[in-house]
Length: 93
Image 1 (cartoon, rainbow, N blue to C red):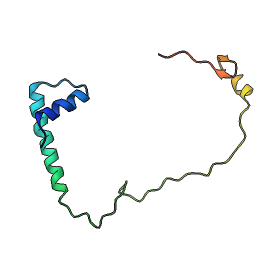
Image 2 (cartoon, rainbow, N blue to C red):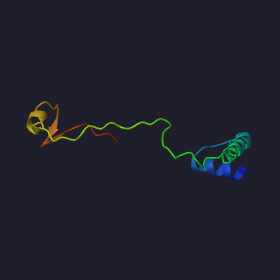
Image 3 (tube, rainbow, N blue to C red):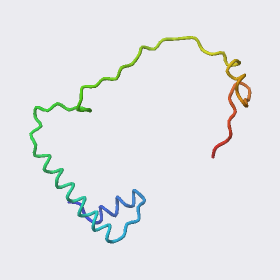
Image 4 (cartoon, helix red, strand yellow):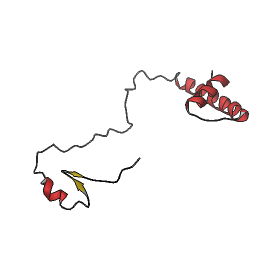
């Protein structure tokens, strides 16, 4: 069972400022969610294989092939600003 102290702890971790009413509301809502999750534990999953996706999907990757590379000087010739062999970009802080 979830307590008000649990809700306050999660709110602290999430850097949320909750009012007293919100703490009460979320305590009740989270308790109902956890209660429903406990009902799901009662399901027989003995013959259900673990899976990451409900559909049998596979990623299709192309094979890596070494190809020709662009000449660094040719690429940097079109750069608006450069420093030695690198693109120079505005500093973002």
